[in-house]
Length: 250
Image (cartoon, rainbow, N blue to C red; front, side):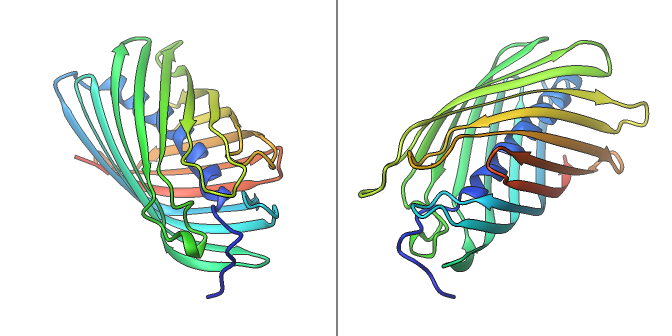
């Protein structure tokens, strides 16, 4: 594999993260609303994610990223915990690399219920190889609010807003960023969930445009233990994202 020292971060990974974040805010909070407060719920998810579009590099090359994620989440009472990472394959005009990406850990607390309002602290640990373009090599810290409001038994509104304190790379024009999503979910009688959200994210690089886009989610329980989900999105930077996940809960 060849690499370029100018590539510090693969942004399509971040674009996927925003899309998955919107999806998990919706599904996780919706499922929490159906669970007993005393229950301990654990979920493990994996799948295949794809993104193609704006690359957060100094030379703004387009990039294509394929990843195999591993996501673990736990919730008991008002507390929630999460851990995620992914194996990445990244291609741009001047870079081709693959390997493990960064690791994100989170802890959340439900401030109120029905409607649900949760606060979440997330830490991105730079476990990816920065020389391969799989990480900035710096940790990031995010503070986020998640909101979920059931309009009816089968219809809900959801939103999140957050601020990321970005670990700055020497010599790069980087900045702390804001992000937000808002959308609506619907549950059919066969328990299939669909959702639509509008998403906004500032680039961590001052040289690049902010991204505003739309995302669509679909989730279907296969049985009492497994569920299959799919998502896709498109934003103002012409970045396309898509993914498929298999989740088991116990």
